[in-house]
Image 1 (cartoon, rainbow, N blue to C red):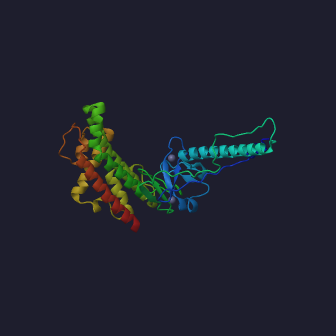
Image 2: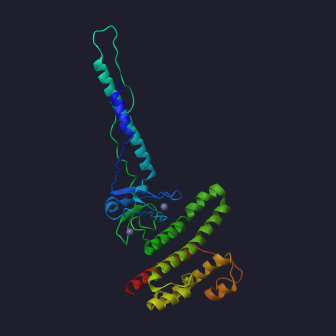
Image 3: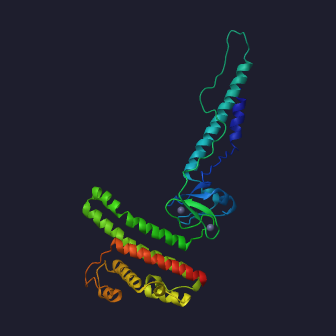
Amino acid sequence: MFEELMKTLRSLESRTVSVPIKADAKGYMDMQCPAKACEFLCKVNEEDWKNICKDESVWCPMCRHEAPPNQWFSIAQVEHAQKEAISMLQGEINQAMRSDASIFNRQQPRGGLISMSMEVKGGSHRTYVLPAPAAEAMQLEIQCEACAARFAVIGSAYFCPACGFNSVKRTFADSLRKIRAKKDGEDAVRTALSEVIGKDEAELTCRSLRESCLTDGIAAFQKYCEGLYEPFGSAPMNSFQRIDDGNDLWRRALGAGYYDWLSSPEARDLMILYQKRHLLAHQEGIVDERYLQKSEDTTYKLSQRIVISRADIDVLLKLLEKLSIALSENCGRA
Ligand SMILES: [Zn+2]
Ligand SMILES: [Zn+2]
């Protein structure tokens, strides 16, 4: 009795169950960063996963955590696989018990005084696994400039999962997108916050959000310049945070700088914005002598508090974009 069941149970000791993973409609497979603090969910093209990603390492597009390929299953895939494995084994046990029962029933003598029969009820009958379904396709598809691997994310990403490459150009474009989203979302944020924390606090938050657009934009451009400047040597620390120093470095490296690519009014606007960032970072936004002298901004007097308007952010984005294009073209020729 129970021979089939015992055989099945013994076979479980050395058993592995493999659960296939499905790609989404666009041919991308889910992957999730195994770093607990990150757990960034993204997708990589199925073909590129096989052909371009390395056997030793895969990188997280968000935090650049590096781990072997077998650690990138998504939490949903792992949960699905566990459920499927248990269901399949339950099915096999159930089937073994059914077959034991049918042998037992066949072996019963007929026509006796007492008749015995065995019946196995309930349990799962499925003895195969269903593949893990893919999460919904993601809008933002990216192709790595270095290795050509294709991957997809929600929001933004900094690193290629197949080679870890960080594209300064894409990172900069993403930063400008984030700043634009912050600026355009201001009214919605104000309305939503007014109801929860009141008008005064909502206004304060929106002002801080707008000011952060200015500091974010200049920081993003600094990073972009540092990345592009790498082939020309190492620039002194934070030189790209100062417009004149950055201009001098580019003039020496490329023979042209910011003031060759911007008109005089544009250069003046950019200088004012850079000096405003300096005030926000170091003087709580209060106008000092240095600001008046360097920016030549006549709209403020000493000790006033500067105001960052949405128009300022529009001007900043336009000028940084213009400079980034000129830099990219000139570096490409250098
Ligand atoms: Zn990560
Ligand atoms: Zn790559």
